Image (cartoon, rainbow, N blue to C red; front, side, top):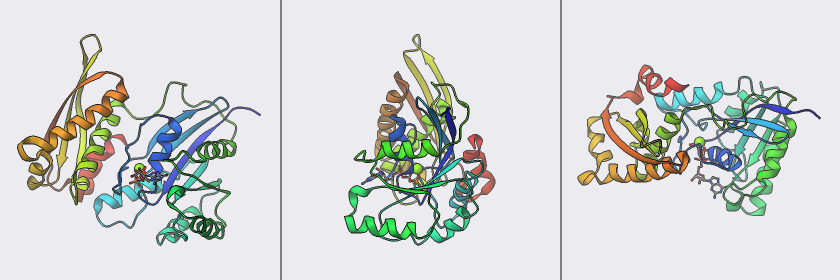
Length: 297
Ligand SMILES: Nc1nc2c(ncn2[C@@H]2O[C@H](COP(=O)(O)OP(=O)(O)OP(=O)(O)O)[C@@H](O)[C@H]2O)c(=O)[nH]1
Ligand SMILES: [Mg+2]
């Protein structure tokens, strides 16, 4: 059997663990993860090169009922990812039944002609009965080639999931060199780590009103230290003091946690300078959303 390769989209409701799954298989954190919905805002490719196959995972924003301009944009991004996929992974949780929003999603999946694998994630949280009921409900739709129950946090069945996906890929070339792990720039990954900490530390509408952009990155001291300047954009003047916090405590904490992630990612010391700027109502204006998020697709 020759070398297998292809593009594998990971789609599913918000928060089911799509990004966690890809990070786990990559063995490295490339994608942000959070307890809050809509943490992923882009289609991001992560390249897993195995001895006999290359899987190009396409992470996508979680599917959801769109409520505002930003969530509409994210939904469009997710469905656009279906184009050109060799295998689709649909991820769900062991809710014991279909998700209420699944029917809408299945309308889109019916037009997809390549194999679809169902991954039921977070089985560590479910009873045997819940898992069996979930398997039965999804099996009945007739949409899925295979169903694999997994737990990303416990590492359960992740190897089986990877092999199942690899086996379904067509024979093909190595699209990316061995050392390539993502199609995104280092600046993009860094901006995402900063956004992850904002998701972790702030509440209510703040995460959804925030965008991050790295505006400067330069090595110094013979490459041992990296200077990074990033802008954190908020949608309203009143959100600025929330991100900055009392006596600058919040922005310092965002910076401290983000710097740890960035240093682990780059393997270098980082000097991180965060600046908070207002971009009035950027998250309610399609052109502004595309300008801030669309730069990298
Ligand atoms: N208990 C449990 N939690 C998990 C598991 N996998 C992921 N999670 C948690 O689920 C939450 C959502 O994970 P993400 O990877 O951000 O989910 P996502 O599907 O990418 O979310 P969006 O990008 O917002 O659509 C995080 O708090 C993860 O730690 C699992 O196997 N078990
Ligand atoms: Mg995600």
